[in-house]
Image 1 (cartoon, rainbow, N blue to C red):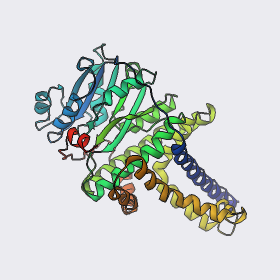
Image 2: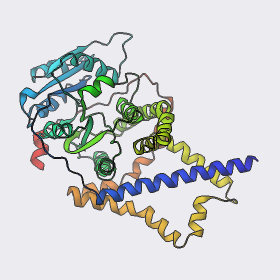
Image 3: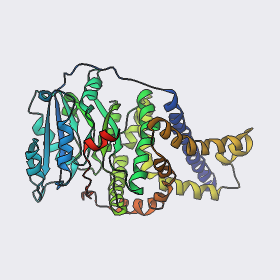
Length: 414
């Protein structure tokens, strides 16, 4: 009886990994075939552009500078910087650059997280009823001059929450390039087809726009270390679709040192585990009861938080039941041409992804080489996952930002 139970669990896990592999391969292929454009519209929405900042005196000037250069009527947007317990010159610099500064004091019992700062600041700004849209940036990110203009177009089509296209602003080092090419692949093979096929986009924490009525109803979770992912899954659970704006570009700073990357990854791991624990059951419930494709993809995305554990468990169970029926082995051996087909499916992304990046984004060979260097970061997954499991849920691990790249430097290169 126990052997039969183990065999059933093993095949269910194998079927799951087979399903998600085919699912995301389908999205990759759909990205090449599908193209969706958003028509332009006249300016009409008034944006509250909100930038939370904790000791960001090195980069806040460049963020505000990029926001002030928007090709959008000045009277239709205001820039707010939430100086969240800053002990440096962040608030002073932000005010000097023309932003409206909201000073948040970090008392002894005050939650110290980005989500807490966003919730606090949004509640204050909502008192001004003239704002029809709320836009969120990080203090190290830059906005393309057409960002608000393109977001206005999407809002005017009835979309309620929109994620902009994220690119890296710094690509000088090998680590920065590896992470930058990850964004390119995600945009082409993940965000774009999900938008075209009616699924929800993935929130990145910056370059996000909410309609007033939606952000008034769904406030940021101050207890979660990945407040963007928590918001994403909460919206999907309630049937709200997050859309994607390819034309609305934001540039984010990538870690230049491996210590920064590990610190950020540990925080993301802890936050992802908490989000999965909180929302996975309801996502699966909605997927089956409402037959909602957004919830299906959201559940798969949440389960990825446990992927290392699931891969290990699947491998152990498959080895233990190797002399019995295993669905993947059966497919490999029984179906005509299955060996060649499986090899083709496994190796297709290896060549498809970098080729598409070169053709669509016109990047140089250094970026293509960075794609093939991605496995070097794989050796960190196990220690990062273990560290994330034991990471304190209420301790925010800040990533230091240092890049002094201006939006003019990037636009000039384009």
